[in-house]
Image 1 (cartoon, rainbow, N blue to C red):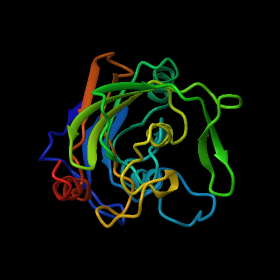
Image 2: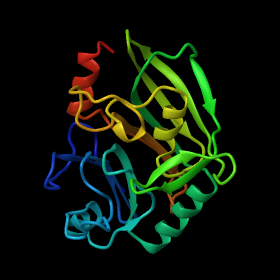
Image 3: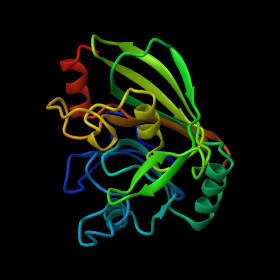
Length: 233
């Protein structure tokens, strides 16, 4: 197995900012996904570049195990063998994967820790939003930890137990703390960052072949760092 140490990563170009390759072997590929590129083709623009296609140009056949929204940066794992794909899918289904996201939000919570359990109903309306819906929604759970308080904004860690579409974004909106620049879910317009300030900060799982527990952390991208600096977080 070939681990690539932070700061000495192989660099990939995805027709958008550089992305860091964090780890690779013949079964796995782990990278720090840049914001602004979809993992798979988008139905409304199938000709747009997407991440799996560009990875396959460099590494051969790639299986998608999980997704991050186009607007979200951070750690992703891809399978490079069918065996790895099956095992990682099972780990996700059994909720054995550790996932932590960092989000800059509007507002300052009074709590230090909080668990949201709003049921969520996805793909609603022309904007395909996910909404809180106790009757038709599916169970969803996200644990939040306050990392830093500012004057009007905060930095939070989010650990989703379930994997519903836009889960973290909707839960934070429902709690009254929409993610900075997440206009779709109630945030104000801002010039602090050009996309919702959500970053998949860390990911842990068992290697599908060796069974070793692996953990990866992705440094913040430049736009996220600049937003934190502007907001004194």
